[in-house]
Length: 339
Image (cartoon, rainbow, N blue to C red; front, side, top):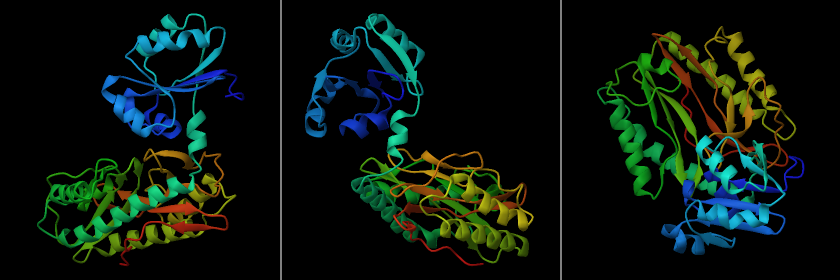
């Protein structure tokens, strides 16, 4: 906050509210940090939940009563707000209720702190990934010719729900030519013999996420798609092996991209190499060409190179990787097929 030039901070992003308070009420919770301390604000629907979950003192009311309660402590202070998660309407309400304060736009203050996970957070992500691996192992036998992509996705989501979790994002099941869509969420298409099927899935368990992709073969794919698969696997394994403290996200992206370029697939790699995972399934650090992020112990990142050939198909292989003091640990254990 001092580096950002603010005396107080109004936290409205749900993941950040949970991070600083333990409160899981999502968008219905806010936290105010001032020189005098911290306060969780929520409404009467969450009074018991706030008492059970939060380590902060809390105030129960709806806006604008919550803002009016905070106003006296903010007079003549520079109050930061999270520009990425505050609507224009909410900002106008802050201005009306906190006329005695100077409002300052901030971005990424807590997101930067959240890039390095605590041991408890690492344990939570590890458990979410272990569940995702178990579910994928259960579902893998049903990925065969004649089965709809939607049926695979529904089975994944059902198993996650039964285990007390939920899907971390819209499940991707992209078969045959639909594999050329990096975000090809499950459709009614029937999987055909001789096709590759990309499955991108993750579990959200106790608020923390996992993320993993496997591309699997149904029957015997074409020689070209087997070649593409082997190239992506080579790039993925090399990038994972290079994960360690001190390496930059840009260096890892360049390593994987260079391998795919050597196989004539550089232009087919249509996205960045990876991202951080935690309370949000996409957070810092970033593994992309323009990234200035340097890996540190405790960071958890995805490594997910891909190659996408419009009208033909695609391949993506993704592992979830913890940066350790002397290297890395791969948290995802689902088998990567060798074609």
